[in-house]
Length: 372
Image 1 (cartoon, rainbow, N blue to C red):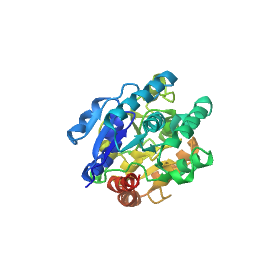
Image 2: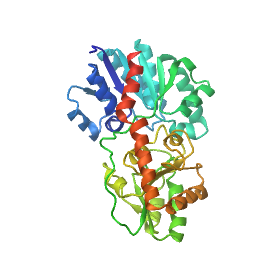
Image 3: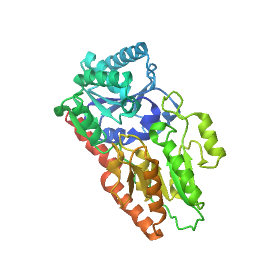
Image 4: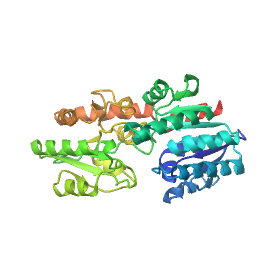
């Protein structure tokens, strides 16, 4: 048993609730004293599972803020918290904590690890924000003992751009999926229509426009199909689609919109195939959840996404922002016999259990933590 203490920092309690409970559980099982530092939101309910975990709210962490004074305030706020709790190690997640938490830990003389959960808007788009984020990562990286990436391509990007050195980097397979919670459900009900589903924030970078355009073309040829969308408008994110565009999609019946759902398992269970035409991911959690529930998937040949698919075995890969390629993949799926679809789903389930199980991912991350 360990008597070490660790602070886990993320950009929201939502992030903790949805992605970090496996590592919190592992750390607690190994005897670590865990403190979570994150802006407070309704997902604080995670504390019911971990009453021994201390949660410290942070006030200056705004995910999409570009105000440098606010970011400086965040750095000093984190420094004050680090000084007060004096952890043996700080584990940072997401860009703002990785950068400004890294500076704060360095100033405080505390060892820290950064987990890059995906490169996102700041790296996908070129311009001043891209250049600034790269510079800040390069500077903050000097203070981290390790930088953990959730896919191999993001790691390679950092090395190729000279943002860190080879001795500091390591990759794991995302944050994992709870394969005991996301399990196959009987889906033997005969349906009149084949259901393709997009689940995620309604962002251009998630490929929602490509999904809808493909839906429009497929439905014109195959009226026995439906295209479902689950997710919310992410206000403040510069990649958010316009409300009017969403309303037009609904009015024209290109999609059936289910809004935001906290529990997506019932929708995955009713779907025949999950589609995520994202421009870039850390490791696409919704694809892992679909695989764990034995659903075939279609996603893009890009960072993170390509690591989830064995072409033709558990799904198909398509080119980024390529609507004709996405349409072709959907039509390939429609031509499959029922048994072939089930075989594809079973293969994905096996992959999820073997490679992406949340307990295995937590074990891999814990090994990195225990060495630093």
